[in-house]
Image (cartoon, rainbow, N blue to C red; front, side):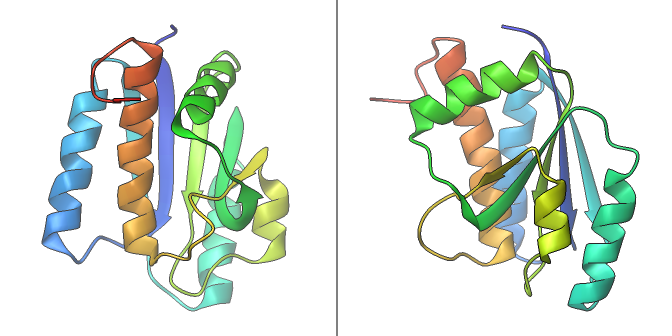
Length: 149
C-alpha cells in the first residue's frame, strides 16, 4: 500500500469538543500511513462557503471526493478498496460542506461523490465519520484489527 496523501477540506472549526478530540485521535492514528492536511475554511453563507471551496479546489491536484447525500454508498470494505485505488493517482482531497450544504458547481468539481449514509448528518458529525472511515479503510488495507467483519 502506498503512503497516502489526504487533504480534508471543510467549513468551520468543530465546536463540539468531543468530536474534535476524536477526529484528532483518528488523524493521529492515520499519520504513520498517510500525510494528512486539514484545511478549515471560514463559516459564511452558502454562496460564500461554496466560493471559498471552489477557490481552494482550483489549485488541488489528484482526486476530489465530495461528501454529498447524492453520492455513492459503500460498505467499509468497498470504500477501503476505492481508497487504495485512488491513492495510486496521488493526493486525495475530501470535501465536507457547511451546514447549508454544497452547490451543484462544487459537486460537479468532484472526481467522486460519496454519501456516508442514506441518513443526513450535521457537517460536524460528517467530518467525524469521515475521519473514522478513513482510519477504518486504512486499517482494512493494512490487515489491521480495527475493522471486525
